[in-house]
Length: 533
Image: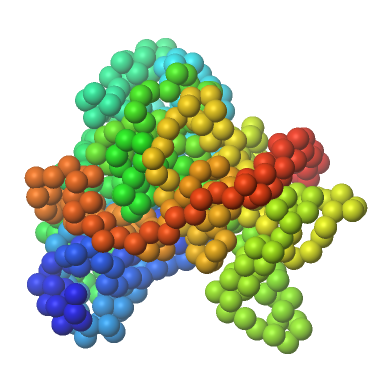
């Protein structure tokens, strides 16, 4: 579209907005009627470890979204010379799972417990056994039941609990709802009904009956909505909360709030069976839309979640991905400054990560662990970032950076081995998105080696989840009588450009050598956790 055409769409309230709360960045992406990103804004934030709990405050949530929205509005005015006051539709997405619990008056009962917390092992195991269905530690129901097991004072007062996206949507619209994808990370979804599994709800209520709580689980959960459903309208209070300037009109249609898994599937056109995507940033997860159910629960290591339109998908999730090498690159930048050289963040990433291309394919015998937090996939409730090597290892920048990239995928590979080797899950297409893929020629071949399958990246991969949420907002505003997959193929991906990388034999062998070393030395990481308190 031309600049003038985009301007007219903005003035006419035809643009759609997606806002996503990531682990380190809140990002707003505005799209036009042909699904192209036309403006954006962002706010960087960081979770805090408070009394042993990874959390963000409600104040940080508000500051973050209002700042990202303000930056997006500023971008619109700078590019098109027009003020943004109305939208066709809006959608909120966020990192999934976690625990935001409120009383009957809407008061937050305990600080937000994010997906990053690995404090619910007992609840996860007991519920997985009760349902014969995987309930990972991150899931909201695991957090609620762990609070029950811990006999926490707030539990009898819970009147509603939800995810981060569900909370923000509630503030904006007054509606206690969730998209089916995000809801599937709170409590299991019945694929036949597209709603919470009623049999499991009955089992849970029976499990906690002895505590005589004044609630039933079904009354605490947000209502489940599929993609394409109107999920409420922006209230005057919600508009004022979102827009610092107070010029955004109320009444805007909102799509069902989604999780970052669902927006990742949408942004990579991976909502049909035998398609998959891998999202790699602060955390990393791979989603495969299933043809048939898995044979067993695997102790909660594999999540069964839903696409935004309700199809079951298997998710292998690792808490840690790029966070540790982000810190190393920052350190190298500080070292450069001490020597009188200053480089932009983009230059540092491109040069340092790009150095890995010339590395020994097994990373020269170097072994880091990127466990900033615990890692359920490999059995860690806490993490300690660690780097070890043998004396004769080939210690140079290229090998060091490759080892950091490899370890970013170590826990993910552990989970994918379950799907590929034990369940024989088949995929026709695996699409990557997220910060891991930003450096040209680096992320794709490494991911292909780790997954031992071809991996593609779309030209829109850099937009990621917020763009996916904007697409879901556009779909909710005008489904055109199409399924989500049909709508995406027609409206967003008809002319999409993709880069596909086939795994090279030497890269696969190199990663496998590193991965064997990584798996064998996990007791070293365990010792670090035990000894560094």
